[in-house]
Length: 402
Image 1 (spheres, rainbow, N blue to C red):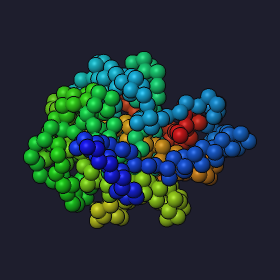
Image 2: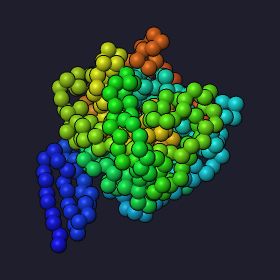
Image 3: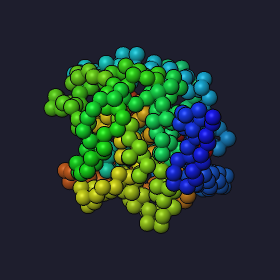
Image 4: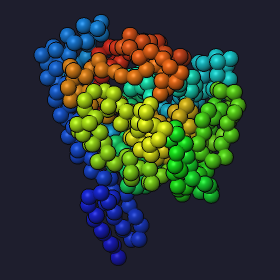
């Protein structure tokens, strides 16, 4: 007998067929509509030449048009063939030798880990900083470029619209452990709750994972670079940074996190609440979960931390080492898409907006970031000034989101 129950609103749509719960994505009409509106605004700014003129004022060229821009797509909308092509390219990078010299990153064992080492080396100057959004835009683009140029990938970087899976992430096409997913939960291992926020405040209740990822295209994957700031129980730290510490990638998928902070309602609020539309500082502080005055005494994750701790574990829950888990790329593509939507609500006014200092939460004290500051991606891409990474149609970029 087949039982179907549809629960609308904040509760996930649940379908029970022959006693088995089936995943049905939550609607993301709000963010999709906002993306469409931003694309329309961007189209107008390109059509009349005003965006090109605005970029040129700061020495940034714009040769890309809406007609030749590529489209980054939501992962769940890709065909099985497209998903397999993406994961195959990621595994290709995991099989290639590193370019980072061993004296710089002794633990790096693959081209993929060049990107992890870059993130580790940069962590103190790319989070809660004025370049957080632009550095990560360049970083995920460099990864996309490596997939295409070094591994023959024909597609473009997909994104994970968090709201689709917020109520049931473990059964979602992103994390269900199927061959076309980004891997499943960790095998169950009894464990304690997981501290998450930079303040160490609170604890994420233990989920149904905790062990090694044994399902999906990356089953058995290993993180080789030593833990930097692990939050997951039982992960030793204290080894020299970037040293060799091979261990399986572990996950503990957490609906407790995603149902609070990764919902469609949270994203729509971030993009429409007047409190976060005043300038880039208000927007990015909310996105990251706080600022220098609140992050140490707040239990609000924000969509950035919430995305990471939806799968969590090790190294996913380690800020510096988080790219070791392949879900990082889909998550940060959605971070970029969220910023892209916010920027293009007012493309001319917001394109050059940045705010923050040059160090994490301004520790140690540092100057304010500038659009002329260099973004250093070490052995993954050439150094380049922030200003070239503030428009998805300017500088090296030619992509949009839908």
